[in-house]
Amino acid sequence: MNIVIVTPVAGPALSGNLNTAYRWGRFLKRSGHDIKIQTEWDGDPVDLMIALHARKSHSSIKRFATLLPRAPLIVCLTGTDLYRDIKTDAAAQESLHLAARIVVLQEMALNELTEDARDKARVIYQSAKPVNPVVPLKNHFEICLIGHLREEKDPFRCAMALGHLHPTSLIRSCHMGAAMSAAMELQAREWMRREPRYRWIGQIPHWKVRKLLARSRAMVISSRMEGGANVVSEALAAQVPVIASRIPGNIGMLGENYLGYYTVEDESQLASLLERMETDSDFCTALKNQCRGRMPLVQEKRESECLEVLLAEIKRQWLGQAWLPRY
Image (cartoon, rainbow, N blue to C red; front, side, top):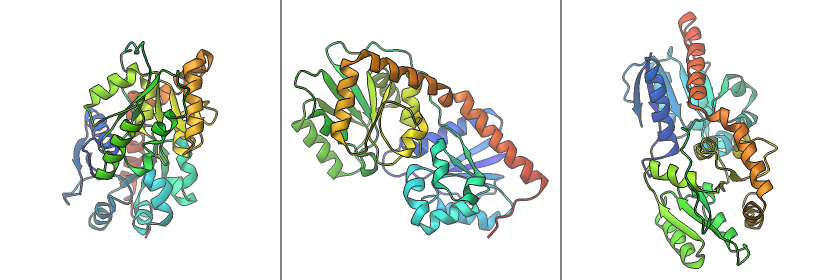
């Protein structure tokens, strides 16, 4: 099939959506499909469009449905789609209506959809490559954060939590990710001045991110909303336990009974979890075992096979009876 993957790009080039587009493109090329990745559909005829982000890709989605009404469309929902845009934004809602299939990135996301949208939805967990183990630092209990500095990520909650730690704690944090505004950069630098345990190193190459993740004792994801964070997949693949805000997107990745949740925006609870990790080896082992149990969800083979199953489903419907959007 000739497939175009449309993904919005805003800010740093290494966005989650763009990473997903490149990874899916790689899988689909390996299966023999012809793939183009574009930020805005150029209008050239294709057999199928995969659009990442219902709201931001709406202009391409709308033109595709108008110009190629018999060609199928797959819309993949992000965190801001699921937990904000599809509730109130007409463009995002229309994108779901025009989609032949909808992809969500973790099982809890299905709860956010209407009955009609849920019937079209399929869950595909994002994968990550395994990482070779790296010996952790001995003089510090190093934790990491991976994510660009923007409001949805609640990026400085961990820095706030560090101030609640016991003075003898050896916990230190390393925050990787670009500042999405000058104001965010100023805040990050101010936090480094105020809190010596917090270090922000900005955007670095992916291989360095993986190396720093692999040597960390834990990864913190403090987001206010997530569709199904690829950094959680990376942590699971690296066998690094996760401390996560208790939001649906994280619960869908780690499971309802995961022990490493704290109440979103509660730095005191976050600090308590971090101290427990540092001082309670049984707790650390329990988190590692729970994460190990979720590892099969984020294997590349599984994600690639799920994509192929989805395309086979689309292709059967498309070849058997031309799909027309119910408008």
